[in-house]
Length: 544
Image 1 (cartoon, one colour):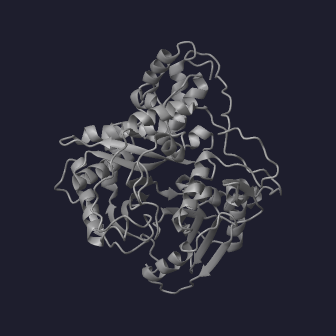
Image 2: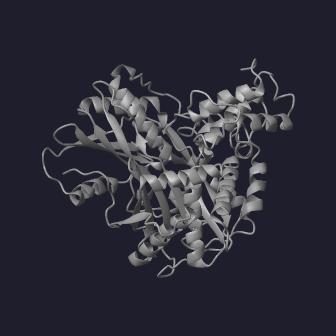
Image 3: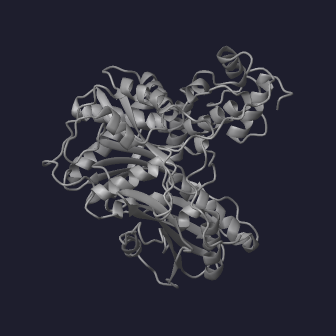
C-alpha cells in the first residue's frame, strides 16, 4: 500500500478491521461497528503499515481514517507518509532461558504459566478451569465424520494436543498425538425434560481435566431423531479461551464440509511458544501505567457476604439470571458506540454503578479478560491468548451515564494497550496487600461472550450456534457474565453460595437490571424479565 496516501491507506485498513467492503475518510470506526478488540486489530495493522507506534487509544481518540492519518503524521511525519512498511523484530522470550535438553517439552508463554501456577495454588479441583460450550446443531450429522473433523482441528491447532508437566517448579508443554474424544449419546425420540438434559450436561462438565495427562479437549454429541442435535465442547482453560470457542465452531463446520482438509499429524512436532509478537513492548512502560492506575491499591469492597471469606472463592456456585431483549441490546450497543466502544462499556458501567450503590464505595475495581490475538499475530489460533487486567473505575455520585460509559471505555482501551504484562508479574511488581479468598486488586469479574453462529449451512454440511454456559464452580466470588444469543443477551450473575444467599444474589442482579434502565434514560421501561435462577442451561429446548 506504499503507493497510497495515508488517508486512503487507512481507509483500506479500517475496512479490513470492520469487515466492510469500503469506508470513506470520515467513517467513524466505532459507529461503523468497531469495538476495543477490532480497534486493537486496526492499531496493529496501522503500525505494521506505517512503522510508527499506534495505540488503541489513538484509534479511540482519532476514530476516522482522516483523523488517524493526522494523528500518525504528528507522531512521525516521515513514517506516516508513503514510505514502505517497517518490519519489526520478534519479541524476545520472557527470560531468554538457555535450552535444557534434559527437561521434557518446551517452556510456555507468560499467560499460560500464570494460569498453570494459579491452579497449582488451589486444592486440586480443576473444575473451575474448564471452558464449556453448548452448541445447537442443524443438519443431518454423521458422528464418524464429526469425529474426523474434530481430529482435523487437533492437527491444525497444536494447543489441542498439548499437555503440561512440571519440571523444576515450572510448567512445560509437551505435544502429543492425542485426538479429541467424541462421545455419542443417542436420545432417540425420548421426550427429555430440560432438567434431565441439564443433568446429562452437568455430569460431563463435572469430569475435570488433568493437565499432566490430557487430552485437554473432549466433545459429546447428543443425537435425537431428525436434523436437530447438540454438541457439548469441553476444554481446559490452558488450551482454550472464549474466542477459541468461536474459532473451533467455525472451523469444525468447515472441516466437516471438506474432509479432505485433514492435514497430516507428524509425531515429534515442536510445541509453538505462541505466535511472535507483532510489536514488541517494553514491559517497564506497561508496569509504569499500572503503577499509576493501581497504586495505592483499591480496598476490598464491603460486599454483602454472609460469612467470613475462609474457603477459596467459587468452590460451589449458583446463578441469578435475566434476559435482555434484542431491542435493549441494540440500544446498549448504540450507547457504547457513541463513546467509541461496544456493548461491553455500558454493561460494565452498569455493573460498576450497581456495586457502588451496594457498597457505598466510589472506587470500583473489576477484573476482565483481554483477547491479545491481534498483538500476537494469532487471529485464528486456538489456545490461551487472553490476559487478565484490572479495570479501576471512579464511580462518583451524580456522574452522568455518558460520563460513566466514556470513563469505562477509556479505561478499557488503556487496559488493552498495556495488557502485555502477565497478571502474576503485575502482582509481584506492585505487591498489593492480600486478603484471604480474594484475588489481588479486584473482587468481581465481568466478561462479555459474543453469540456463536457459523452462518448458513453448506450443502451436505452442518451449522452450529450457541455459546458458553456457566459452571458449577468458579474462580471468583462474583462473576457478571453477559452471554449474547440469537434473541438478545443473557445476563448471568454467578455467585459463591458459601458467601452469598440466593436472595442477596437476586437483589444484586435486580439492581443491575435497574442500572441498565438508568443508563438508557428510561427507568420506567420494563427492560429485563426475570428468569429462573436454578437452570444452568437455557435456550435449548429438546421437547419443543
